[in-house]
Image (cartoon, rainbow, N blue to C red):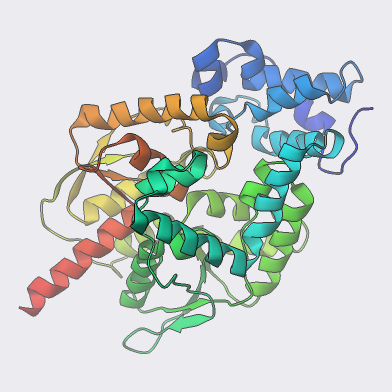
Length: 409
């Protein structure tokens, strides 16, 4: 049958691969299995076979695509610059379109539709908060069980949408905040840190009411049309803003890279929070704290390091806060969270999570900095409660706040 959707991998994308194999050492699933079909080269070979009519989109093809974490580490080392992430999302869209089943329909309902319904996310957040407080969260299966490792979800469930925060003086500009779906209720402290730092630097911050989920989880699960709808809604919501700050690496990567047509203008205005805060520190709009706070381990989210090539900025932020960044993995191997991957492939996800946790333990650091919610959940699951996991911007805001208190005294 070949391809049936407009999102399918293109011949140009597939022919760019020269089968050199440089992707093999950096691919988590190939490292775990040694299976060629579990490598970027093997997956591209399967896609090419479908494109040429040698293979069809069947369950075996679906398994090969589903096993990929979509971490995009292969793109960094690829001499031909194959857009593997884009091709993978196209292949996943084909799997969903050609192999409909109850499991894929359920994931599309959750990640393609439910996440953009604010009321459903709020209700789920209330349930999660209740599970935390009653102590039943650790006994829940899969992703729900990981709620136990989250920082406590506030009650009532907060939201930044539809709100504006002014600086103390005359604003030198306005920056829009991308609230996201999970970040808003589950990681509100990160939003607070970003907002307060931008206010400190002299900016007005606005969180548009009509924004929605970025669509990354939908795209990764093959719900391409749903993901495109979300991009279009966000294009309209952020119209008129020159800068849109995003404090979840997966969201910023998706909004930058998945905005065709009118969305291209939004993509050009999106900046990850680590980029923006680091630049404000460098220009002197935000302070450097001259206090030795000790070591902090660095975990690079795949969609920050590999997709956006943002590596130096989180480290610069932590140094400005007085921390000593400690490397745990110079190659940035995936932690195994990968959105919904921990639900579909729990054993692989847990093995990668354990390896990442072991890397942290080796450093002896009691704080880990990570700029993505999925990674934070994964780390909290596999580390004990004596190790804190927090966003780099969150740690920096705490240092700035403490310095203000000391100065005030």
